[in-house]
Length: 97
Image (cartoon, rainbow, N blue to C red; front, side, top):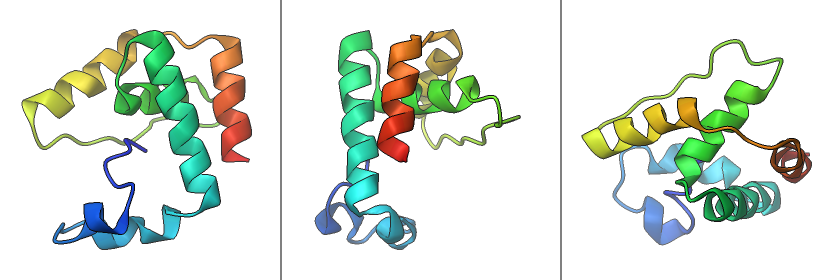
């Protein structure tokens, strides 16, 4: 949900690139667009918004995230400080339906 993979070219040569193919569809791109919009409005990264959204969902007890760089770790940490409005959560929920 970070938006790292948006095209087939983005996946080429990546170890995990093949695993995201099933998400590269209308629904996946709709979610990415909603994450991009929320991130832009909040001055945050899509990865931070995605994790904050998962943490705000009542059915999610513990979102699983990983980082392979210090920059990615900073994005994950900032998600814990990010407060999403009811409207933003609703927009993301609608996009994922």
